[in-house]
Length: 237
Image (tube, rainbow, N blue to C red):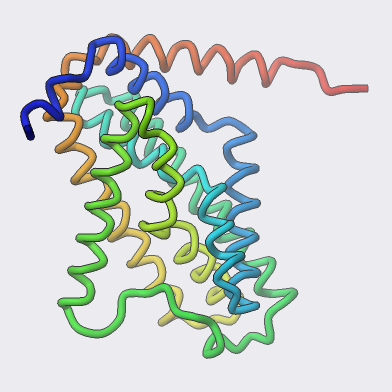
C-alpha cells in the first residue's frame, strides 16, 4: 500500500505539482499583499483574543508555498529555486513583522501579557511536539500538492502548522519591546519552517522529483516573464 502511494503519481501530475508550487511561491506583488492582509488579520486576532479571526488569517496566508518551494529546490538541486524561495521567505518575514509592528504600535495597549502566546515554551518535549506537528503538516502539504483531488486539504494544512500567528505575535511584541516574546515567537516560526522543509523533502524524494530540474527551470523562467510584464505594465490612468 505504501509503495502505491508514491508510485501511482503520473509524470504529468508531478510536472503540474512542480509548476504549481513554483507559481504559488513566486514573489509577486499580489503574494505580498495577501501576506500582509493575513498577518494584519492575525495581529488583530491576537489583540482581540479572537480565534476565529486567527483561523481566517491562516486560511488566506500564502506562506506555505515558498517553504515547499525551498524543499523542492533542495531536492532538484536548483540553486536559483533555493535562492528565490529563501528571498521570498526573508522578504515575507520583513513585511509581516512590519505590518504586525504597525498594528501593535497603534492599536495595542502595549501589554503583551494579554496576548495568547504562540511560542515555544515549557519543556523540551513540548518543543519537540511543535516540530513534529510542523513535519506532519509539511508532509501532508507536499503530498497534497501532487494529488489534484487533495488540494482542498491545503487550507487545513495551513491552519494546523500556524505559520502566520507567530510572525504576527513577534511583530506585536516588537512594538511593545518585549524581546522575550519576540524571540520565542520567531523561534516557533523557525521550527515550523524546519519541520515543513524536512518532511516535504522526504515526500519529494520518494516521488522522485529529483529528475524534475528541467521542469522547475522552465517554470521559473515563465514566472520571471510574468513578473517582468507586471513591472513593465503602465499604471492605470
